[in-house]
Image (cartoon, rainbow, N blue to C red; front, side):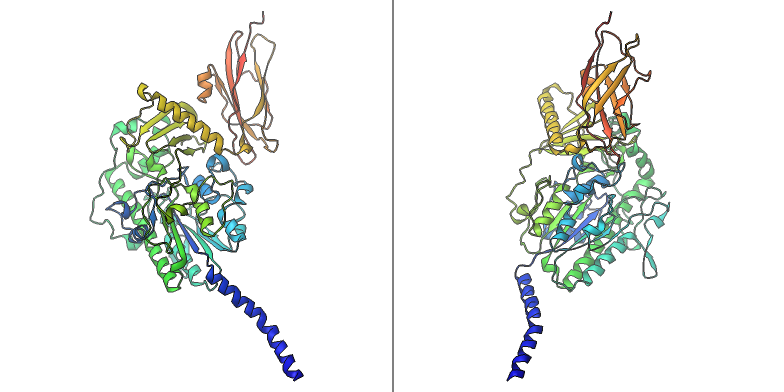
Length: 576
């Protein structure tokens, strides 16, 4: 009898932990959280999808996802460039807040602590990433359980830029490589633990250093083989000549000369662009088949989005960067197999909505710092609204060949201005002029609309900016007591933790010029100097009896710039 009791106790000792495990499995099954696959493409514009009515492109799997899920026909990115847009996708923040772009060093860690993959990982999700991460950050191991970050290899000025990865003994296109990494990941899943797989394809981005620009997989050769791509819209000289000189002489035009300035280049580039997107579509087909084979298809949400829009020769331009719809509008598909009869939505979804949407899918309340909103209420009920009256768009990267700009968009209107000369404004009625051709900014009858949108733009910039980047304060000017009146400019960073490494001063002859960021008397440019003053240097001479206006902005040790300070007036009275 004693032996029997001892045996039972020993048996229970071994069984109880397993009973607890089985019970936990049953709980997980009952309250199962969805898996998420987020697919990001590089430079895929809003209409580069068969579902939009594009007869030139072959995207049957994306079209199927759009038909079965929710297609956001008015989706856009808040910043039309990959680096800043990807940072916004990860953090749910406007560029005005995270201040990350190509010229900065790594993104501030504070923002990445609330990135969607890190929060998911901290809350029991198994997270993975493959492809072009696109943001300088050393903590990928904090965000992902497994990952590999790679992109086109710039050292190769030919197809090897896209063919620099191997599967077995075969060197394959990056699209195929990323697709296979996804398949390997799915096939390895044997746990009930939910996962979030983020995939970032390098395609259809042109390989800029190569003469041919576009490189696609052999399977796409037959696509568009016997078709002639129609000419670009707005291709006539008048649309190019309407641009400011810094656009006409900048990278948008240079890259047009690489890709579109002859009929042969145009046909090759547009076909190549579409063929590369078709290559991604084939990988999505394989991914969906693998999910079904693994029994994961009924509980895996698939999100497909472009990181920014793209010019296909319109206005005789290429690339992105500008705030026209070509640059900012992107495809966005969210397919949730658990929800039947999903419908298209005209709600203006944004890239900053991706992080809160993914977190809400996981049953996690998004951080209050996020600027975006979850799109799940719309997917569940198309009658729900985002309640977005006005959207801020911005491109803040300070680069000689790409002008920084900012603006706002309502359902009916779009307002654009260039940051380094805010007197250059554009206003478009999107209802009557969807191609943004007729600039109404100088039309007297639309002055009230222009002023309203200008004020709204200023208000949103103030609302979305991180106080860390507030403009300098305590501005002073010390005038040397000599006939030339040489000024000494002084200031202090607004944030005591802001480690200044350089500054830029604007000195203007009028309030209008200083408000428009025009330093008509002096624009110092970015000066590498840690001191919070500019000593007399003989460059600027102010006359007695004159009134002048100046302001300053500064850069930190990661090359992230602050806002401009409020302007200060300099009034020189006659000293005699």
